[in-house]
Amino acid sequence: MCGIVGIIGRGPAAPLLLDALKRLEYRGYDSAGIATVDADGTLTRARAAGKLRNLEGVLNGAMPGGSTGIGHTRWATHGAPTEANAHPHLASPVAVVHNGIIENFRALRTALAAKGVSFSSETDTETIAHLLAANLQTEADLKAALVETVAALEGAYSLAFAFEGQPGTLAAARRGSPLAIGNGPDGIMIGSDAIALAPFCDDIIYLEDGDIAILSAGKADIFDSTGAAVSRPAMPVPMEVSVAEKGNFRHFMAKEIHEQPEVLTHTISHYVDVAAGTLRPDRIDLDFSKISRISITACGTAYIAGLVARHWFEAFGGIAVDLDMASEYRYRSQLMPKDELALVISQSGETADTLASLRKAKAAGQRVAAVVNVRSSTMAREADLVLPTLAGIEIGVASTKAFVCQLATLACVAIKAGMDRGTLSESAAAALVGDLIEVPRLVSEAIRLEADLTRTARLIAPASTALYIGRGPSYGIALEGALKLKELSYIHAEGYAAGELKHGPIALVDDTVPVVVVAPHDAFFAKTVSNMEEVAARGGRIIVMTDAAGAAEMGEGSAETIVMPTAPAMAAPMVSAIPMQLLAYHAAVLNGTDVDQPRNLAKSVTVE
Ligand code: G6P
Image 1: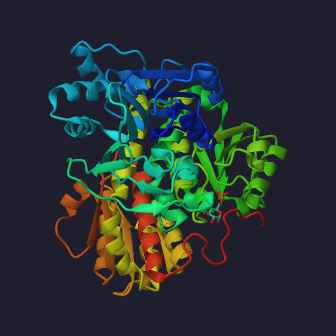
Image 2 (image 1 turned 90 degrees about the vertical axis):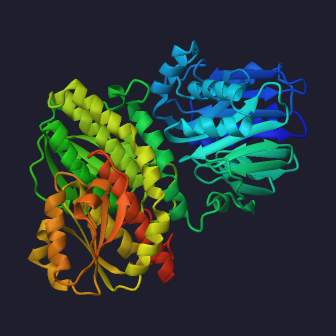
Image 3 (image 1 turned 60 degrees about the vertical axis):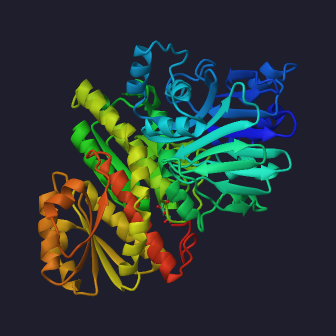
């Protein structure tokens, strides 16, 4: 996964950039590079495919001078992990390093090419360098050119810039992906996380979404996306790395919720060639034309990911799916044909019931694929095929970022199933992949609803019971919303299929019971709204999560409405998951529970 560093130092920048990049190695990467600017303003770039030692090999004996510079470890998304695609990318006088995905890079690249720009890489990043170089010629100053440049970018990203002819100046910007600025004895630094900066800095400023920063020796001027000056608090660097990882968030769970656009980018770009807009079939070593059915087995939130994915396997792959909680699966006397694929889903890869299910399927001679987050886990070792989620270390006991990454991974596997079985045309598969590429940005927009959801959480926090309803894929999200609320805030919550409400739980409804309705404007919308009306008629306090089209169709009413970003059908569950997490998180904070380690719960359940 990509890492960004930058420094305006008091001594040579290159060795410090390399040291800081080494601290980001844990994120995983496949090429690296630096660019430095010396006292005369000469910009020197060095890049290498592969590990940092290759870059050190390139720099050996030829360490570039200059105390200003930027560096990057790249996790390939657009284009192969070659030296030509490695960052920094240049368009005189600009050098840029970038994390994330620029969704509209093709349109930007075409427009720049029409103006005579030629490109030396396949990356989306290079368009940013050319765009800023062009804007520097037409705009009054660096700030105006940066505002103009980021306004043209769509997607989730963090950026750091150095400039030929300008020793002692760096710039940075972020939307979706994290970025921090640190100050210390060696100078002022930029880093994609606190871990890169911790040993070098006394204090750290976390940029907020939409922020632009211009750094000069010892100081950072920060602006919002319109160019208006803003101030962001500097925080002391915590002593322990584990604390440093929490950044300026109060809880790991909050941090992990906010990391979702970034980790989704990593996960999606593992399975998708983002530049080509196509699936990477070699990353999913399964031939679904030879598979008769799938059995999905998991626990907790991972089970819910399976429940949502069943819709995709059926709709895209035309394949029958059995779904079981692992604690049930392992003791059933089910038929286990050899041409059935056993698919287990687990963040930790250690959950005892899921592991037992994996072993049961293997013993029956089935091929087992494991969607896991921890690559060194037992499930990853024992499965025939590992389908990794690239969510990074998840510390909050209640799974958040691993869940959305499980969904993204399963969506890719379901698209592969449709392609193998001929139930998805090439263009239909390409359209779904295109929808998936939009997910990090949509999730980032959903996270921006946090202030609204904090207010809505006040309606939920005092309740003793809450209901969550949804249909189709949103039924799974309703289950996840209820699970999150009960595990974090200890409020009794039930997730129900909206159509099933009248077969029991509607008896619970009175004016003390909040009913959260997950209703994006999809094929199920009208029916879900009818079920919502049944609740409203009985005095239930409705909180509806919909999108702009849904809100317009429902019109003004007494329901509390959260308007989520408009998302394509396949992206919608990943987007709707965000308000569920934020609502539960803020209700728990209001109720003063231990958010990261709720009572009685464990992150990795290794007992039956
Ligand atoms: C525990 C966690 C849940 C998680 C479940 C399954 O209950 O609290 O957040 O969904 O285990 O864990 P796994 O590691 O198998 O995904």
